[in-house]
Every structure is written in C-alpha cells, then in structure tokens.
Amino acid sequence: GLEQSSSLNGEALMVSIKAGPTIFPFLGPESGAWRFALAGDVPLRLKLDLGASTLDCDLSSVQLSFLGINAGASSIRVQLPQGEGYSLVDIQSGAASIDLQIPPETAARIRLEQGASGIHLDEGRFLRCVGMTDVFQSADYEENRRQVEIHLEGGANSVLVH
Image (cartoon, rainbow, N blue to C red; front, side, top):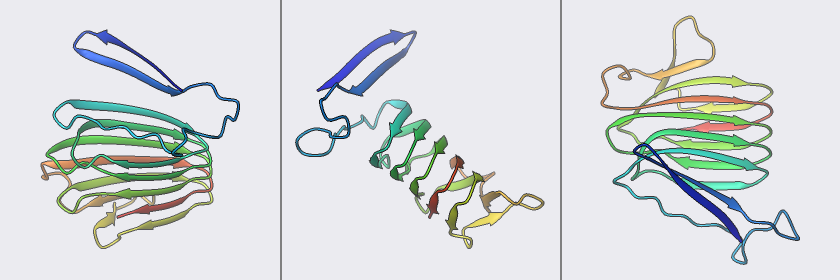
C-alpha cells in the first residue's frame, strides 16, 4: 500500500514515499511498521512529514546533510550520524515525545523554541551559550569535524537530547 515516485533533478534523485490509501487511515502494514534501509555511501537530505505516528530512525551510518521532521502528536527517536561532516536537523512538532541521540564524538549546537515542554539536555555536555536562554552547544563545536546543528520548534513536547 505504498505510493512511491522518483525523479532526477540535476545530480539529485528526489524520492517520495507515502503510505497508500486505506480504509483504516491510522493503520500501517500488517506488521504495524514500515521499514526502510538507506544507503550509507550516498549523501542524504531527508524530509519527513509524520502526522500522528511513531518514528524510530537509526541514521548512525548514513551521510546526512539535512533532516527535516514535521510531526503532530508523535513519538520520535532519532540516532544521529557518527561520521565526519555537518548535519542540520530541523524538527517542528505539536505534542510530541522527542529523543535525539548524538554520538559521543559529535559536537552539537541546539536551539530550542518550545512551548510548555519538558526539556532534558545533557548539561554537562551541552552548555548554555552566554546571553542566550534557548541555545546550547558542545564546548568543542567550532573545531570539531563532526557537527550537528539542531533546531527544535514545538508546542507541548517532551524533549530528550543526549
């Protein structure tokens, strides 16, 4: 029941995958989960529109330049890449549970724009930037060869970044 399409745009392959029509719009496949594998040797830009769902995403072995997530009442767990380079993560959500796992070798800058949310950061690892109440950063962010920049915007969320 998946709808898929792809097109070549210059050197980039654009792929769209949507859950196909169903009589029961909140049910996925028989197993209860859609499973996808991504190539680790191809640079990726991912945009995910979730609605009310559960996302468990292990991106630890991919070359990720951008991850955009737009979610409603969702549970989101993302394991971020381990390799060298820069990744931008932009998550916009309603009432979601968000768990972002950043590899120990990766430095992060985290910008929070949250409503009535519970925020839990590893404050020994991610220090509040001077003069900014909503920006946290690893001490070695500027010189680290493994960087992730995270922007979290949402309503009543539970956020864990570690």
